Length: 551
Ligand code: ADP
Image (cartoon, rainbow, N blue to C red; front, side, top):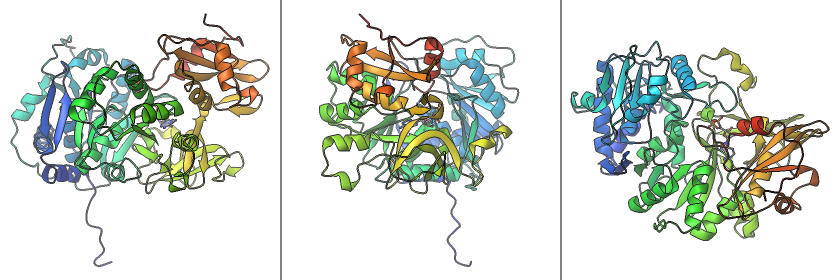
């Protein structure tokens, strides 16, 4: 229709333009390998991103081609985040924590045309099966890194990233991408539940995702925030935080590879970080350090932590709020949903309720972001939103994948009417607040009934002596499966299997209680820092019912 408003395309270069012009002086702080910090502004970042875009074009990178990054969170990686999509190519963030065979599989499945890698990761690159499609190797040198990797014969001549940029002219690149429906980025699922699969994000999906992060009931990013992106930039587009921060004009802090509690706390204090995001395991270790008062850093600047990727134990919500005055907002999302898609905040109806009720609510995964639609399906069809019925969560929206990249056999992940089947078992409360009970494959099926491993873990981590807990199913001749709890005690703490059992009694039906408690030194992690339950299942497959006293 004449006069219809439909002529503006939502693209990554549009985000960059806004950051460079409206918020040009806002800071980007990046930690190097030696602990020193690099500082510059959005304006300077944009200038270098344009140089990189021009350089990639000169190297022959064409629209639609995938350019991979293998890098920690730092300013050069951020430049690639903007430069690659701006020239119409596809930013493919490789997960540096995966086994090299998986990285090789992913890079060749994606058909990457070039790799931009951290110098410190060259030893990993040297173990890769070099993708046949890759014509260029660009190395980002950290001033402090002195890693020498044996050059492999089939590598192209490596190009130094900074030299590449300095040989280009300054100024905005010509012919930026203009089609919001074209491919901008790509991530692979980390393969926790099978072979890694590629998800391709359009400019529109990334732009809408970034915009949603600015809404108050979501992350609520603003130009008053200083955002520290702890979540790796290779994990689901860094949960959209780099794009969201640029769109909002938030200061951005990139912690490099130093993700230990002490390094994070010192960066929070020195840069006056107001908001950060990452998986619970990271924030659990930070909480332990804060509790042990081993850290004198002033973290009063933190307004919120966005925590997701796996369930946030209620004890962690309480610990941060009550002992350190820090609010946690739990978020849920998947590689297939572009990033954070539900966030939990307190509805006004619970304002006058007890703290216990409020924490119980905040331990949920939250309500859907704008335009993100949810429903859940049980054995008898779609379940009611009553907070009790359980079913598999199905989702749709402008940021939800409708196919995997070059993976024809995965149609069963989508319903006939086009919703994505998440594999997460949930309840949905009135108003659409999702509570995740388990991943389908983590549910424990005992005597024909389901036991939620997540609920048991959550409760176990509320015991004062428990640092971490993961509950898995072990085969049982009578009941099919029974729960087994793997527990890491806090340093210096003691608790017996009987103590833990007593702690759970009362909160759960008797048949839910784990038969066996294994006290372990640590719980293995996935490449994105989640508990790797498949490794525990392999290890304790034959552990029969027995209550072990760690003493
Ligand atoms: P993977 O975990 O397989 O590596 P993703 O990083 O895409 O892949 O993770 C998506 C999954 O992570 C979800 O399907 C869900 O099971 C889990 N998840 C994400 N956020 C939460 C959360 N807040 N609580 C519990 N589980 C979560």
